[in-house]
Each structure stands twice: as C-alpha cells, then as structure tokens.
Length: 275
Length: 314
Image (cartoon, rainbow over all chains, first blue to last red; front, top):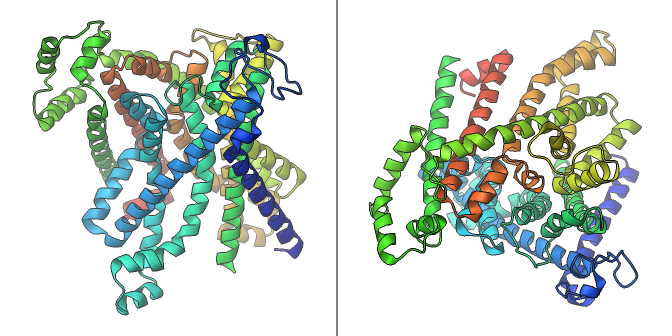
C-alpha cells in the first residue's frame, strides 16, 4: 500500500476516534450540555419549530427535542456499552474455556450457542423481555443472553488454532498452569479481534435497543429514548417532521461512526498481522 | 446425499430439542405465578383458592421434568397449548399472523435482491472506479440506517407529501410498499458489500488465471467464469438472510400496524399470554432452522463440489 494512502487512513482513523471521544464527553456531560430538562413539560411551547432556544424544536408536550436527543443518546450508548461489556466478558471466558478444555465442557457450551443461534433476529430478545416484563434491566439481560454467543464462537476458534502453536507449547512445558496460559498467553492474542467485533456490535445494539423500545419492551415513556421518540413522532409527522428527523439522524450517525471505526480497526489489525 | 440429509435432519432434531428446553424454561423466568397470570388475563380477580385450583388444572404442581415432557408431547403433535386470554389454540393464532410476516419478508427480500445483486456485481466488475466508490459509500450509509427511521422518512415523503401511498393500511398490498422497501434497502447495504467481496475473492483463483493466460478478455473471465462460480455461494448467502428477515420484521410491523407475527407477539406480551410467547419463539426457531437446512441442502445439490466435500466429512 502506498505511503500516501496509509497516511489518509491514519487521519481517518484518528478523526473517527476523536468523534467517538467527543460523543462520549457529550453524553457524559449531558446535564451541562442539554439546554433544557428533557422531561420538563411546557404546554405554552407545544410543537415549536426549531429555533435558537430550541435548536431541534419541541414535541407535543413542549419538551426540548435537542435535550431529549442528548439524554436519549446517553442511555443508548450507556446501554450498548454495558451489554457489550457483559457479553464480551462472558463470551470470551466461555469461549476460551470451551476451546482450551474441550471435551464435555466444549460440547455443552457449543450446544448452548447452537440453541441461541436457532432463533432468528430479535425473536429471542422479544421472548425473554416479553416474559420477564418490559424495562431496561430486562432488555440488558436479554441482549446479554443473546450477545455473548458471537464472542464465545470467535474466541473458541482462535483458542483452538493457538493451542497448538509453539509458544503455547513452550509455556506449557515451562510449567505454566492452564489459567496462566489462558490469561497471559492466549487472551492478549485474541483480544484485538474481539475488540473489532465489539465495536461493530455497539452500533447494532443501539439499533436493537431502540427497536425494543418501539415495541414497548424497553424504556417506557416519558423517558427520553431515541426509539421511543421516533415511534411517538409518527403521530405528528405532518405537523412536526423535526420530531422524526433529529432522533433518527443522530442514531444513524452514531451507528455509522461505530461501524466505520470497526472497519478501521479491522484494517489496522490486518495490516499488522500481514507485516 | 441421503446420508447427508439424514445427518442434517438429526442435527436439526437435536437443536430443536434444546430449543424446546430453552423455551420451556423461559416460563420459569416469569415473575409471578402462571396460574395467577392466566386467571388475571381472563379478567378474574383471583383468590388464593382459585389460583390453587388452576395450578392443579394446569399441571403446575407436577415436577418440572414431567411438566416438560407432557408439554413437549403436545408440541410435537402441533398443540402449542391455548392462549391464556382467549382460550384459543396458540397454533391458530400463529398460523393466522404468519402469512403476513412471510409476505412482508418476501417482499423485503425481493427489494433486497433487486438492489444488491446488480449493484454488487457492478462494484466488482468496475472495481476501484468512481461508480464502485459511490455505490460502496451508499451501501455503507444504508447499512447503518435504522430501518424504522427510513420507514418514517418514506412515509413522510410518499404518503404525506406526495400522497402516492396510504399512511396506514389493514394488510393490503399497497400499505406494504414502505415497510418492505425500508427493510430491503437497509439489508441490501450489507449484501452489496458481501457480493462484491465474494466476486473479488474469485478474481485471483487459479481457474481465472488460467482463463486469462488462454487469452480471454477480462470481461469474459468475469461474466462467463467468475460469476458462474460465485453465483451459487452468493445465492446461498442471500437465501440464508431470508430466515433472519422473518425474525427482523417485528419493529416495522408494529409501526405500520401490519398484522404479522411481530404485531401479534406484542399484543400477547401486553396480556402476558405466556403460551403464545412460547409458541412464537418455538415456531420462529423451527421455521428459521428449516429454511436454513433447505438452503444448505440445495447448495449441495446445485454445486457438486460441495456435495463431495460434505460427504467426505470435511
């Protein structure tokens, strides 16, 4: 690859990273940045067009759309990170155990992943949340239950191929225990690839979280949630299209950001391994 | 081939059995007593005695494994129990709404095919051209689009502004256009890229190189050789997406009041109708696995190379 092209890629990568950090700061400081209280109802300001005081306009209860979008993004991102953290840890642990110990443990864990993969799309999440009851805690549980499978499958596969490598054999023959080999020698080697998966998944989780809210299974009104805002906006589509435009646009941009970031991370990793 | 089919069917059986255990255990996650939930769903204010009677009537006093096997025995015969709320057999509810989801998924699938196949081929044929970059950027955009947002935008443009399409339908064809289109466009973003990759992977294959050294033009190599070889795996990949699509229409269905599975299940959840939720999960998993099995087997039938590889156990 030419030097110039490589430089462009570096710039893009750091640009994306900067954008991600900016969003992280924005949602962390939501209280300071949001111009209004996302829940404050003001019946004198119903369905106002975007203006200086309300940059994204107001909704049918006079609430500030911009503030609601900021808080909504905060809960989406926080939820996506929380679910990713849980499924990443759980999946990687189970996958490594499955790959390294083999036999019964492996069969058992892999049969569980087969079972979970037998449900298409949102079906398993809908069923779990549907039975346990709506609310963000149950959504987190449902998405973590379906989310760890991918990490487990990938880490298992990588452990299987690493297990026979020279350096692992060397570590074993120099007396390292199983736990030590897994944590010190195997984990650092598979971490990067799992991180790429995690980055891709964050965008997907944000969409799923919004989708479940639209189904009435996630966050409940009046919580500021991007999916809920979209589903509430439908009633006022003719009168106040801005209610639909901004939450969707923000969700779209953030999802795209994470998927671009995932792409860049993957390319960088491939370059490193091919060098 | 027969042995392969038998082996696959056996695998399917094992997976469906574990799916049934999972779905059965789901009920134990439910906060509250199913007997109590059932009575309240039927509009009673249950007393302790009534709940106790109902528990025995529902067999909830039996040990868990006996409950499971008697439930499984019914499920195998196509009896998914009856709805807590309406007392109707669950299977009827499922079969009533499934065709709507099937039609919507099929329409979305066709939209996806019509967009992603020509564009995917174009990007591979005109690799690194302006058109390639443009389509790839567009596909990246569409893959990140929330389909429910796209649906609202289309609704605003085509139903409210241009008034070409109905805002809300009752399951007729015209009201399906926006939902199907939104699902199809979002999905095609992903598949344009995958079709491109699948074709480009073949570019450096030995047979392509051989064809080139025999003096064939790049165009002939692409259309007559590469495309033919890649077509089966591309078709399989696309067909697999259909099963996933069946489970992915729920949000759109609810936004557009489309009377499919997704709409039905949300209603069942509101009433905490556990047998319907169970039946839904089991049914969807069964259909999904069956579709994937059929695609997988036809893949082997269409491509003799795969058939041999699979039978020799690789």
